[in-house]
Image (cartoon, rainbow, N blue to C red; front, side, top):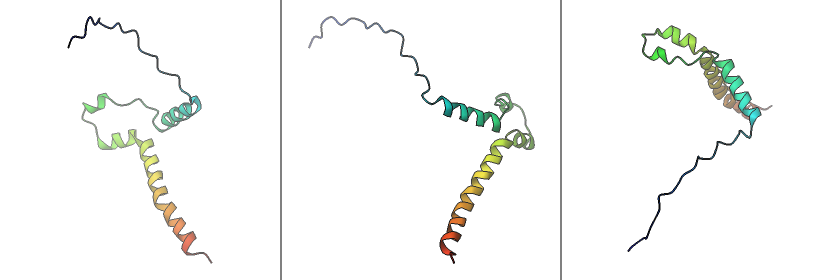
Amino acid sequence: MELGNISQPVYGPGPEAPGSSTPGLVGMVHGFLRLVQPNALPIALCYLSFFLFQLLLYELGFLVCMAIGLLFIVLVPLVGCCFCCCRC
């Protein structure tokens, strides 16, 4: 089986990434992340000996969001059960 003369393909530059179709949502997400964690990511801290308290203080915004989320996860079913079962 002979394929004949197959030339080497010439590739051009790839397609550019499309612009965001939801710039409002992207802006809201970046605003929230800047609110929760205004500091840059501590890449150099991985190599230093770092105290746990300082790390927790640095990530305080994320910890508060997690605590609110866990509270929401616990309270919503509890309140729903109270409304469903305890109607007078």
